[in-house]
Every structure is written in structure tokens, then in C-alpha cells.
Image (tube, rainbow, N blue to C red; front, side):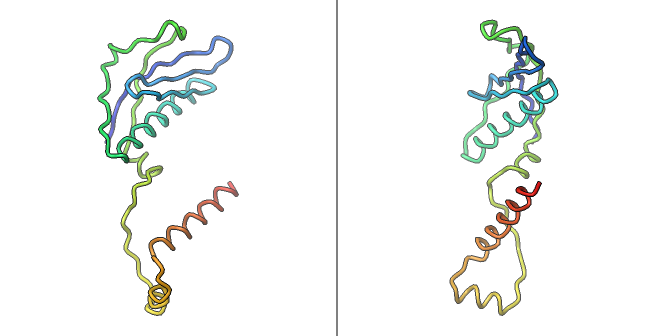
Length: 139
């Protein structure tokens, strides 16, 4: 699912940083040290906001037309731009929804798991999580 939401970018007058808000997604704010980073952070924040809603079984708000979104002058001078969200890619990378996988075990290992009342899916998930954390710690 690909979505497009308008976002408001507010430049920091004292640096190259930007604050970003997505008015259609309540509380969705972020920022970056420069415009490219602010755009990337805006996409990430909006995608995370929407993924959370979808995983909770909630409906996501429709995007407003860009012409209806304006910078808040009380916050400062800003401009409106669109954020393109690829929710399928984002969900595949960050989603907590379980994905069904089939696997093959040697019979003796399956017998052991059954005798020990082990949930093979849980054991595999825990082992993969540990490997992921070790790899992340090295990087």
C-alpha cells in the first residue's frame, strides 16, 4: 500500500535543521539536521504512526489535500510538501505482525521438542532475535 500525506517543514533559523509535522496524523512530529534528513525522518515517523494504527486494527485517517494544509505562523515560517509512504516495505521491515513459515526438522529433534513441551516457533523466534541483537551490537 502506497500512501501520500502532506507534511509541514519548519526550518530552524539558527541552523540547517528542520522540524516536521504531519497534521493528518495527530502527534506525528519529528525533525532532521538538514532537509534530506528531515524528509527521511518524516517518512519514517508517518510510516511508523500508520503501521501502529494498522497493527492495532484501527483505520488510518485520510490524507488532506495539500491545498488545505498550511504552516502554523505561531510556530514559524514553514512550507508544505508531500511524503510518499511505502507501507508494504515499511511493514516488512518493522512490523510486529507474525509471518507464517514452514520448516523441516530431523525426526529426533522434533521428538525432543515434543518431549520437552517446547514451542518450536518460539524457540526459533528467540534464537533469531538473539542473532539479530548480536549482529546489531557489532554494527
